[in-house]
Length: 453
Image (cartoon, rainbow, N blue to C red; front, top):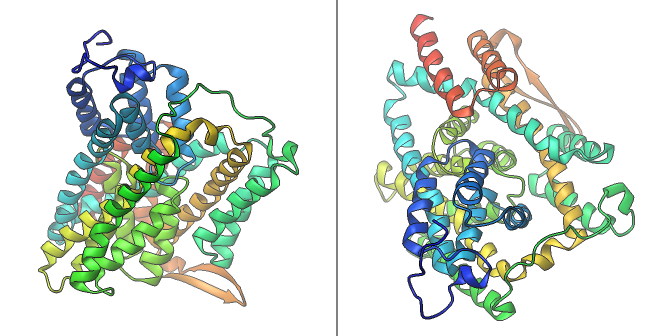
């Protein structure tokens, strides 16, 4: 694989300029397509798959450069696995390589998710389908707990970072603090505090790394920003012009575009913002429906952040005019996917020429580490929020000034949901089953439980 001849022998390829094997675009395209259709398991599984296929098997990219690219992508808002695919595609074949790799990482999962969302709407009244979705719901708390444990391993590099996680949890749970403010506050703490207290943050020098490609410089970056900002906002602007600024499609485009700019920490951190705004404020869907969306996203290839597509689907279904509900829902799902993923191409194509400088900035490294610790607290709040809404038919909040405390009516506890959730927790956390396998098993058990009870 590594000795194939370039499609254009007259001049060096992008990969050759970057010191990488000269792989024909068609060969790379087939591999990116394979990854797109088989990349189950969330970001960790997807990154592991790319490492196995690109580093270990084909040796298209070496280990230091792969890790260097991954570190850069963790600095960015949005899905780091999709951005990693986009960046490696850019290293190998320029803009067309990055575009193809990034799109193929999303499109297969988005197609499956759209089909599942239609099944969710049309089949939820069927006892068997309702039971399957009930079982999927019971796996959600265990799925989030697994993600918390995984991220905490790399986040907790000292008691200071544990304190950040606790503070983030408390602000969200007991003060109803806005999610963006909590994450940005953590980032500012790291960025401003690292020069003053380097020992506290544990970051003293620029991380070692390989030299990244820097061709094009700022002129290329500015051109990329202009092009991709226009591409990103064109569908949102079209919806506003044709349907009005208050139409649900316009609202979805603006909401998920804002969310894409602040979605540090991955899909699970993003769900905290969705819980606050899409569920509690805007009323686009219920907590149970969002849990269903997360369960569905875990069963599809591609990024888990495709859960946002389910939110957009249901929101547009419930406010379809002037379209029929199926057409509006499909448009809402597609616009949500667009607003969620288009910004990633802007970050990659504009920032790629300057990767090394960004990565070597210790203040940015400290900000990223604080965000990662904050995300553990955010996800812990999300797990508590899901448990409150999924296990109890009646729950709410008790307010004391600017503080609030969760309340649950224990007489409405769903014992079947509790038992299945506990089983899912054991399968994930103790027996280390894969998440897709757990979701499938819990769906089957949910259908069985609903048939028996």
